[in-house]
Image (tube, rainbow, N blue to C red; front, top):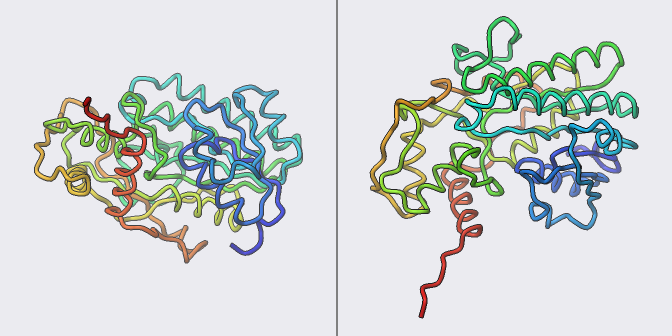
Length: 332
């Protein structure tokens, strides 16, 4: 980094979570004075074990105005990674819950930052703001002309409203706000809860617990771009530093892998190559292709890119599962 972060007081909302904890680690390395605000509903203090001593931690619910105000007080920069963002199996049936939950956090933190004089702000939006028929790779475009992707509609609308709020706050109050539309993240520190988990941890869990056959939602032809959580954290820092203009930027890349290809790699790196796979076409699969047109991202941060191969990253996720669920010794 350029030295921008050194000495800055930075709040990472959701900083004990999957991507947030990687961001906190990097901010500490870059010399920031970091505060983490997290409910620990999905995050854990273990995720922050490498930097726990220098980090100030506040436990609470950011849907509370009072707690949001407490967390933001005295901060130079607020980075909002706090969200309820489950996988499609949960999201498809809980649109109202996800819209309300995420909207309250977004509203509270931006208003708290305005009142506290924290001018620089990162808003983490989502690729779910795009409609189902968006071109792939998907460029940044205004998203209020059609509905967001149907399977994640409530979540997508909450992120659309957050982007709109950010534009208003930047125009009316002079706040410096970066908006990133995040695509699919993976890596260690993911969670394994079947009802709410995302596709890679869900598949790794099925493979390593011994499912036979492996059941996958949809046709298997749906394609996604996956970026390691460490790279997401890096991209968030770059865009917060260089492009706090309330203009959304895709945080993702063009390359995609199909679910058929993905499960084959997971089976190979976990030692279960050849296990039968069944695709359930009665289940929702979301958009057929989700990948980011990264033209704008590359113009702002030409050094940005994926720093690990998908296969290496999946080996890391497999090892993470084995750390979380070590084998039970056989009785003597």
